[in-house]
Length: 285
Ligand code: ZN
Picture 1 (cartoon, protein in one colour):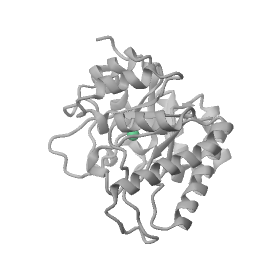
Picture 2: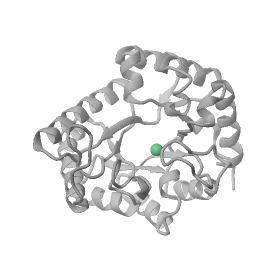
Picture 3: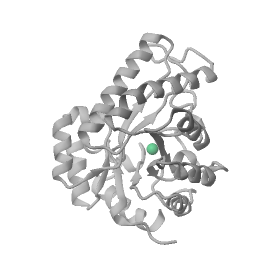
Picture 4: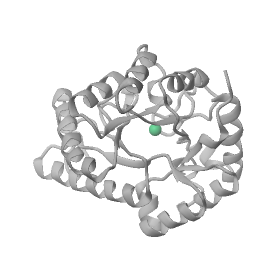
């Protein structure tokens, strides 16, 4: 399999968030010749929206996405309305930053205002997600900001995302129409027996639904549900194979490295992390 194009490497800023603030991450990407970046809202808020947009532009970087909107389900109507309003602000920020899409982590079972899950109604949660995305599309579509559903691994179904497969994300795209696509994160979907077929389905849609591609690796054992992701090459995901499926389906976008790693990569010298990201993108992705 051919090596990935090094110009397509992008850094999800969560990968070095423990060590650096956003301005330092932007400078680090420029220093390590990583041309893509995908910042998180909290980091942008701390660094300032306009300042972040111009710093990214001045460093010669392009966005591969903006993280993130979503979290639609809630126990009461008012909270769902507040979530929608917050998502509209995320769309506005994504536009200011020049992001190609706003990534959606759609939310799990409905929570109350203290963040406690108050329902076991998974079907109802999925209806809230569909309705929430539909409402947000009415705002994002005319603004020209694509929304990218990121299906998460089913271990997050209760608390983060009740869309857990590419098939479910494709079905939502079928139902809700243009302006909606998918962020394919290998960490979340590598295990899916239908993955190749569902990537094809997303790529064959017109326009293509393949809006983003996130990579890292699945460690065995995984010691933490959230913050124990591996560097490419350190785990069991056949990343070159999944990339070949993305490319065969017409995806030409960036390869965004997204690693949450409390006990390993977040403890290392961030310059070493970025050097390793570059090498492993070439050799193990
Ligand atoms: Zn991701």
